[in-house]
Length: 192
Image 1 (cartoon, rainbow, N blue to C red):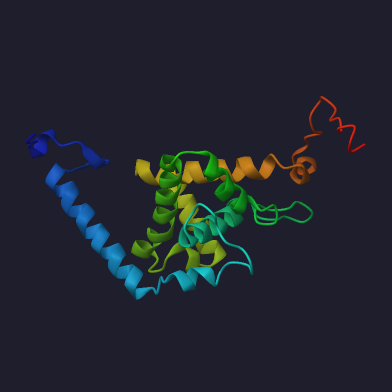
Image 2 (cartoon, rainbow, N blue to C red):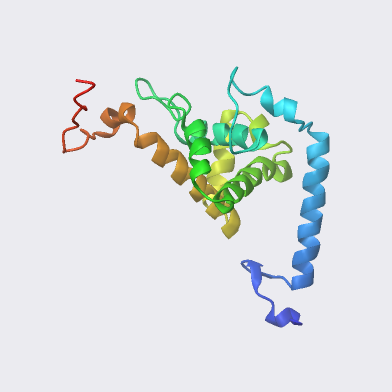
């Protein structure tokens, strides 16, 4: 299907793009990210060094898991007595839950994490996992309000899983004013 420049849909507001233009820009972005990954030293051992001893993902790749840890720590940091996402093991929980879902969800999560990791290379000259916390916060805030739907969607998905798996855990309930379930929990007779 041929689309004239006047019929092209805008990728960004006020910037129409044709199919050929989209493919050319995508190829250029892929080449830039590939070159950046070589320049940034992105071997598996670089990422594995950022994990705690004995910490290994089961479903995600080590690279994606490390980025998930960084994102979770920035979205729900520890504050005083309130535990943060890392202290509650949210990245491991998200990784473990992927075993109960099809590969599409894992692939989507990995794609979102790769987008978070590599996008800052274009604007900040570094991947997300190497940025300081304030720069990471700026990247996430930029994603949340981005004009590109893919960036906003990636942010919203990562925020949802982080917040969900954080605040469904009992240690966080006092900080948010939740008293717990109304139905009392009963211990099985064998454990009473």
